[in-house]
Image 1 (cartoon, rainbow, N blue to C red):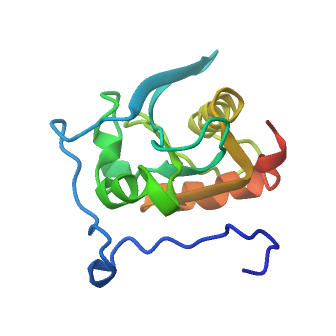
Image 2: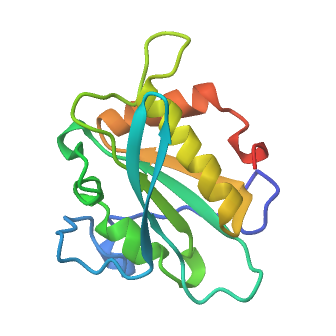
Length: 171
């Protein structure tokens, strides 16, 4: 690691030869243990989110937070469909060496994470609000905030990092 943090890590989710679960679908009947449903609102609307909390942490121990932004096909308001493609991520961060909070907001079918202007989309503004809310309410190691996404969510990852390059200093 070049960042100076002794606990930096990289999680490879599709390497079954190393014992990691392969990515796959999370169905509504999937194990949502350790997760809580939440939402954030402002004058433009509301978005739901699912937060997976790590287990097995010592009292007061902080854990990284991974923000997962879904693709356009996983948009909606059911607070489940955005979990598609997250099985490997959730299963490998529940506890142990890679224990982390995983935050998965869901935006509706008429919204986008990324903006092509200096103003964030309403969905991105709410995503940032959800991230800040979780950082303030959970035992997050704010020096280890990670952002990832699929398709539209991948573009959203670039967008949030452009808008909030110091997100770890906002809690």
